Image (tube, rainbow, N blue to C red; front, top):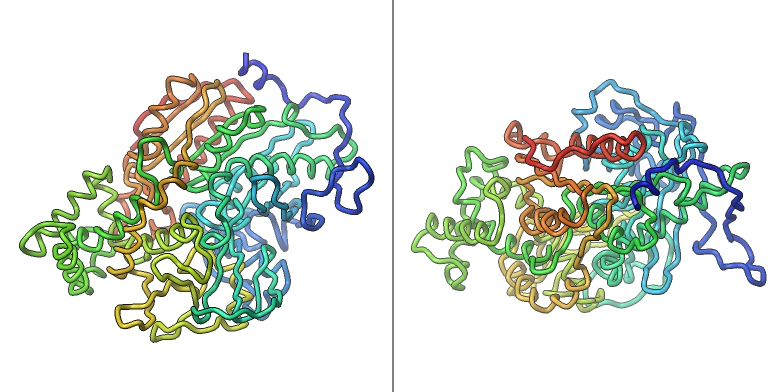
Length: 579
């Protein structure tokens, strides 16, 4: 049986040959290197620098000491330290780690950039091997960055658990990250964060920047799972070169757990679908952005929110919702939005209150939880829907830089909202500060208004929102390639999701996946966190607590549970709603 085979000790030795990387010339019969260049290897002493916090400790992560300013970011370690600092602050609630904690983990780190192969695009991955890694009982945690982030985009959420557990951790960027090209400026930012000159090219869109997720990752999302499997297999090869005196690491002698959150969680569940060879032993996916047959995809509900939420938020008690005060300060703009929705026949009602109520009801009818709608002001303040819709429209419609969907461009802007060129100091900080999706690191979302003048549309533009919504039908053929089907086997899989998730609706994703999978896998578990929401870092916003709870403790516990199941035969927790 599957479980008895996979739960048997995977750390037994065998007469295996160490796999060596083909990084130099290729001899006859030798496979060519999968890499653009030989992987870079770095060692960290765990004192001045480390795998987990870049030598900052939790105190340094929470504050800002030792973070290199832009002029110093030509050096890899400075870029790395700043990138790790930014990732921790953006992805987790550092208060829960306890200030004063000086957790540092020594070890070795590989940075690798993988060539495209067949249908699978190129990507980059980070392999971290802590000094506590035991090659006689090897454990590998395979993860992917959340959102559109780069190689450090899962370190604070999933990677930290693996490093503290003594597992090697490989994190794939899913072919995304902050790869940026400025054709008119004549430069590009590589996956390693280096600025390289390129030939200049004319563009009708001044200072427009080509961003990987928006303009180059057309084949990425349907292959996130395959990218994850590929990086996991290459990680085993790198581990074998790191420990050449022992037998090669393989899926049969290495414990392999896949885990991720958000887009990274989607990559994990995609990987399970594609994992015919049973490479993965167990999986944990938190708030996964997955698409299932018969359910709306991210682009659908993101553009629905973009249209309705600026009006629907007025139906909430603004004195009780987080950042409601900001909506109150911009009441005229939200009132006008309701008016335009009514004029276009999208909502009904004779006054602002009734129109807002109708907009809110339409969101509820689409499958959004009431608790999630209470975060509408937060979503609008951070330009969440414009960010998602503008980026995904370009990639789903396969639009290049000079043919943008709905006229949307990505560029730096001056105080008046007009496009400008990124300064040299801003360029070198992109790798560390950017999230891979605008607005980020000084890059904004811009579009022309009715007069033809450029304006920044990060927070919201009614015309842009309506245009992006109008192309929903045009991307149906793309979203069909994203459908996750679920695998019928006995590997332990835990999916957890916050019912108050205001980005990835639980009703369209994890609940459907649980209904699809639970009866086909006796070791599948679904944990619904009653007051969990998507962004733990948002919990520091006034008004968020105690109404909303962090997801990270449940993620850590789920990883503990599958690890104990595999190594100690402990029983998995029951599925259910957790408060």
